[in-house]
Image (tube, rainbow, N blue to C red; front, side, top):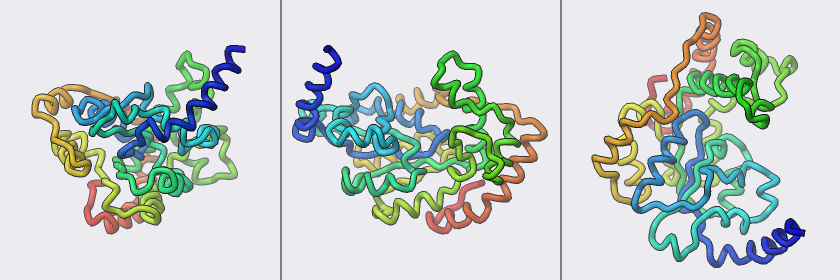
Length: 276
């Protein structure tokens, strides 16, 4: 009975959200394991930014079940227009860059919105992602254990290079997620490149202040104060370091060579070079 009442209320409220709720002013669209959590925690402390949703990700554009709930459901994650005022609001979903169908949906629902992507050396990103999923096997939460990758890193990469031998039940996509040039070109088919700020993970970690200043300029908001920058530099969000075995080093060297042509095309497109 209570569930039926809640569903009835939602059917009444959701159509009203486009009138009373704010749309996001910008999105952080990627990538996985590239300090997007840290960036989210920094941005929500900015005096000109406000958020109301409990999680940094709404899982709207990348989850068909959520997308089918409609745009009103999505707007329910954002502040009212009255509360927002002249501030900015956003969501941070590092999977948005990867999936091919998402930019068309974003353009359709949000128009020419600004977006931020942090790119990480695809080799390091792949290894970090594997470490994360591998660690899930020891966690108490069943929904995470169900996504655990119990393979060695070598096994995981070998199987992604040989799909017919792939035994994974979950689409980890350690290799494909690192082909950033393909993902960005997909977005450029729908959005002006000037609307997408691309940052380098390594530079972001080395100089938070400079990276946040470029974001401030991109979003037309004030720069963070030096005291806040210092505070961020003292924090160690998502800064885990992992010991690499000899087998892992061999696989990483293989990936380093594999990604060279993809990285070169990326550098040419962005007009800059990263130390990858």
